[in-house]
Image 1 (cartoon, one colour):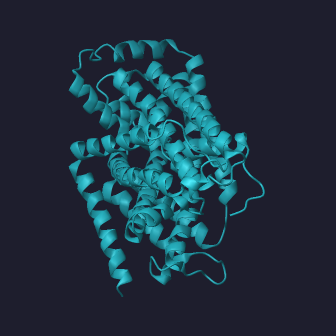
Image 2 (cartoon, rainbow, N blue to C red):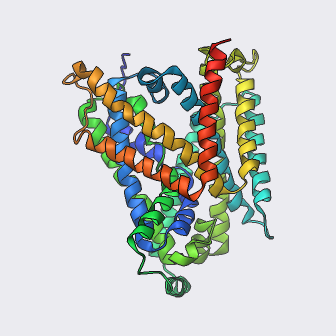
Image 3 (cartoon, rainbow, N blue to C red):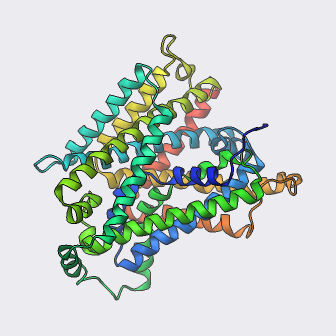
Length: 441
């Protein structure tokens, strides 16, 4: 595939940052803190998560360079393993994306409900999240395309909100210092090694969700100018920026709220803004954050039905999934199915933590299996060495670290929430069976 306008270092770096930074940092910090037995576990999880993301991004970048095809993240499975695995993982990714959308919608609904008096339940948050999904489902049915505009708005809002949280570090309040002092008084300092490691594994679940997205660099291998130099530099700079931003935000949470109190705060960013900038500032912050969530919801509702369309077009799914409305060109059936799956997941779990655990367990399958293809591609495409493609250094150490990290997270989920692990494994098996049923018809 020939590409005329290739990505320079700045553009590729911005893509890396844009793929990773989502809405998770406004919620998963509290989840990660709840699972960490002490601050050293908490901050180690965020640093390790960044280093794992760096190893993974470099691994996927080389796979993309050696196998430069559109939708490479999904097609490598069919190339290296079997079409049934590609189909099953592709479907898992769709379910995982639906779960991610539901999780992010719950983040937004939690912040939105902060604007109104009363104690709201998980069902209330699920209803608000469902309303947001239905709203943008209807908008997409009418053929209104927000796509790039929505994504640009999302990026501006996300970065702005993160910078506001970081700025809170430079506006300390006397009340915040007193709270932190009290909140950190009872932090354990004598955790044994096994408890520390076990706590780290569970804490990494939320961190993994927040750092996710870099695997999509697999699609840009042949679209980068001087890939051998630009890709590693872009990924290094991008991940370094992300780690820095995430650590600064977490320092803001830790300094202003306190480690122990962080564990019980679901809308953790709201608490920070409220203590530093007052209720009015927190209200404005929450409103903008919810707008960012709506843009994210719309983006996934637009993109994922297109994956289902492609699967319907090539016969992996029934042809009905490839049906378009003649007037609006909307993928009505695929859009409806994806929106329905999002809402079903919302009411099946209702709580952010349950959806989060389920989503990351599904991702563990895809991450380990897809990154492992680097060993096959290294052997089968050796003739590409020296032709200008990107070839990572420290091979095979980096992909092995990446695979081991996600295997560790998967095992941690299995120990902490066996039901989520059994459900995820069962769904994978069902999708493999569905593939053979469809093909044998």
